[in-house]
Length: 562
Picture 1 (cartoon, rainbow, N blue to C red):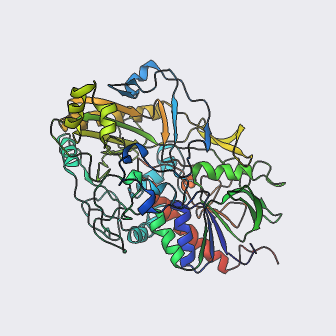
Picture 2: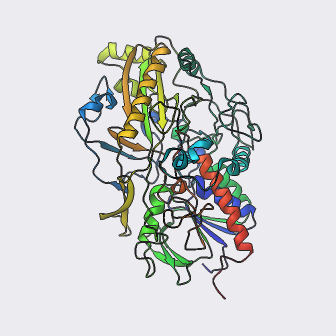
Picture 3: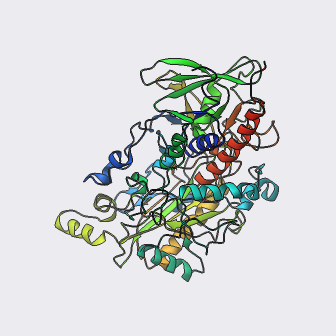
């Protein structure tokens, strides 16, 4: 690739990379978008029409399970037994006395993890962006909510977010572009239980179309969002940002092209990248500017792998902060059987939400918030197989009749909470495990301290209370992150800030040292928020980064010296 072929190389095509690629094209720049995984064709790759839809789950073309390793996890204590995951058929999910990994759940493919997300489109709580100055934890964001608000509005219009005017939890300059989805009967029963406790459930803002929009059809409420949307009504990055970037004529897309190293020049610029194709061939390609958006695990890995004479600990790691401040998904759910037939196997996975405890100071005696929502689909309790193996005991005809009776009566309350950074949670390079190219894999270190467990205890207790108030007397399963590492949202490993000694990038996502290197994914988050799904905020930051990059490029501030 000649230096003049592309103005910017974007590495990663998830929420950050896809949004950045489109925004850079809108600014008139020529973009090369690189994705380590393959492309998906929604109509043929997703399996909701097949008889094995339930057991097949999301059809990973490039299985992500062995892409990272996990350091040994912490011991479990008897005093936290109420936070152990269990099922009434199988008993404890983790029978031993050490926390167990289920894995970092992500998709390697064009569109990233938005291909299997539930479509939640949340804005960050404004107070969650000031955790250090207000509460002495995490770090303050170098950008405030008011600055991001116009970008949130643009993204909601582009992808087609459906939301309610009754949701006043965030300041808004414009209404949602689409009306809210009708809440399923199961969600209405949960909302009634919450209201009996004095809590509010409002329609959840969703990147799933409540009516035809942007040439895409409205949702058919099959509840299969997490298995991939064959209809394209879910606003995943491939059918929104990447499609528009391709249509601009200024974006070249290469899938199944892994970047293995960044190459620094002696002028504090990235001068080249090293890519590896599926046949194992590596080549070095010159670049003008780079936007790194590989996610909060793979982005720090690539920087740490990219050592150079002036950067012995990895590119952009002069502060030693690359990989630090890892924040994971703190979660809990409680599932039970409702006495009424609810049809809970259909509808949107999370069509309503309770924001009452989302603010950082909303939980008594605990710093950091959380949210509550329906969780039947995300607990994977939609089909007869899950009912036969997890919901109904026994065997034979009685078991068969029990499954038939239980199907559609499962009700789940789920909660996601703030994850605060700590010294024992970080990402580094595994000293032993290697990938196919011979490079060290990323190694995740995860530790939940007492403050996290107090928040998780509140989340579990409130899930149980809401479910009981909704009429569920028979709980059959509970699971949470006390004894299971299972993260879908990860943050913080390339923190943004104003001080180069304590952060990796500035408020625009640009490396403090390397002037043509930008980061545009959740690794830049200084705090996680109180349970918000991060994709909308990642996209908002990526648009802002793209505008800043384009302005500097027009002034030729990113070019190599003549």
